[in-house]
Image 1: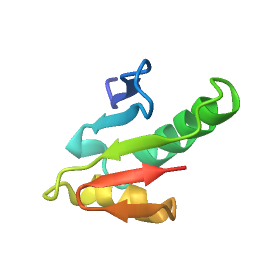
Image 2: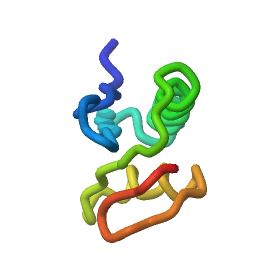
Image 3: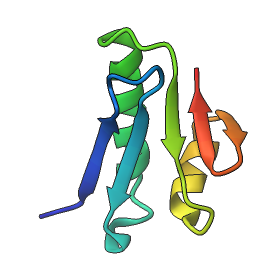
Image 4: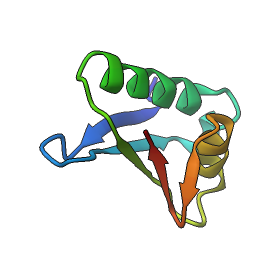
Length: 82
């Protein structure tokens, strides 16, 4: 069963971007939130990154809720993790 994708893009950049895509039929089960939370922890603790961007489209309410639930700083349509 395909639920979605989650990954880091631009690892060679100063602040890579977290990308997330979850099938709409799977919204509401916290799959996306769990994936992003795990990826952020891995990025900081295992990869030694100091900052990440979480790119979120203005119309994507599900991704906006994830970023807000993780209690991070919001800047326009990008969520910034540090």
